[in-house]
Image 1 (cartoon, one colour):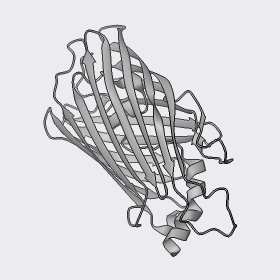
Image 2 (tube, rainbow, N blue to C red):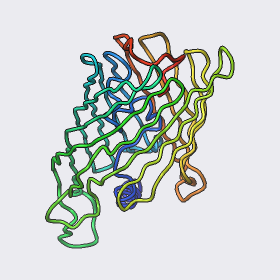
Image 3 (cartoon, rainbow, N blue to C red):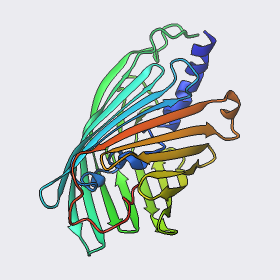
Length: 302
C-alpha cells in the first residue's frame, strides 16, 4: 500500500515534468529523436534498448525502444522508430515512419534532412487507485491515439556532427473531457558531438544535447567518452542538476554492438530514495556503409 501511495504521489510530478521518454544512450538510436538520422549509418541497422528506471522498485517505470534504418537508393533513407514507455498506471507507445534525404556538401561533409510521421498511443487506468474524493473526475480510464509528425536536420562531418529536430510538431491533449496537465507536448532537441584522435588507438568523444519542452524547464546532457580503436567506448555524462551517468559501448565486430548506462540521482529530493536506472542496448548492422560517406575512423554518433 505504501508503495502504491508513493508512486501515486510521484505520478503527477512525473507526468508534468517528463513528456518524452528519454534514453541516456540516445546516440545509440538517434532516429528516435531526429528522423534525419535514418539511413546515415548505411544499410539495414537495427537497434533495441531497454531501460528500467528506479530499478529496485516494483512496478518501476520501464522503457523499450526499437529502431530500424537503411539507405534506399542514392540519397534516400527510410526506417521506423518505436518507443514504449510504462509508468505505473500510464502506458504510451510512439510509432513513427522516418524519412531522410542526403545532400553531399563536400568530400568530408553530408547534410541529411528528415521527416517523421506517426502517432502516440496513450492509455491510463487510475480506476483502482484510492481517492479521498467521491466521484473523482480524474479517476477515469483513458485510451487515445494522437497522430503527429516531426522534422529534423543532421550534419555529418568526418570529425564532428550536429543535430536539430522537433519530433512532434502538434500538441495534443490526452483527454477532451477532463482537464489534465498531461499532453503530448512539443519538444525541441539540439545536439552535437565530436571525434578527436589522441593517438593511433585513443580518441575523445565529447557530446552535448539540449532538450526543451513547451512549459517544461530545459534539460542538457554533457558527456565525455574515450574510444579505444573501434572496439570500446566508455565515459561519464551529467544531466542538468539531476543525474550522473556511467556509459559504455562495446563493438564486438562490424555487425554487433552493445551499450550500457547506469544512472544515479544527484543531491535532490529523489537522491535520498536511492533510485537508480539501468539501460542496455543491442545494435545489429547487416549492411555496409555507403561509399559516399565521409572518411572517418569511427562513426561520429558513437
